[in-house]
Image (cartoon, rainbow, N blue to C red):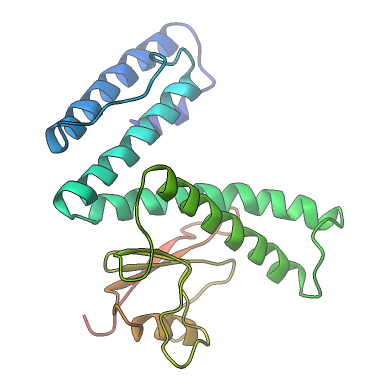
Amino acid sequence: MVALADNILDLTGPANRLTTGLAEDHVNMLIQQIRTIDPKYRQDSLGFPTTLEGQVNLIRQLRLDRAVAFYRVKGETRPLQVETLRIMQERADSTYAEGQVLFDAGRLQSRLSREETIGNYVDRAVRRELRELYNVRGIDYSKGQQIRVKYDTSGSDPTYRIPDARVGNIAFDVTLSRKTLATPQVRGFFNSDFKPDAVLIVRPTQLVSNSTYAISSPRK
């Protein structure tokens, strides 16, 4: 549904009205699903959005609310893994474009290379976005929780072993460079305290096709 709405943002007339109808049906379905999980759920809304952009944003918010409900009520992390990946990808894409403009304008000060400087800018923005979203929804991402944002998993050796985020048994790493199981940082993730089943490498889609991918644990 989100993909459908995204693809026809430039259409008007009957197609626009049809999409609005589909979006409203999808919103109602999501709200019903959330209330099935959490009967106390209440949606704060000023009414159904009149623009396609607003409708798509509402669907995204409800998908995240559904994932949070699964986690809080049932302890299931899979839906939140999906939504966390979506959020990280969107933010990585937007801040990568911003970072390029800022660097070329001389507004990102660093002694590092262009790629490293922009990469650090993207990393910080993605982690900040996750913290804000988790805070708004009351998700605890402190030590000992299944949800974490940028923390040390390495014990006595902090080198190359700090994922950007953890959701359940999945580690997330935002990067501009391609990484594999042979990358020391990735091996460090798999040897960390929570022994993830997979590491999701999140790269801006502007870099290359199939930019984001999963690396399975060598233990599997």
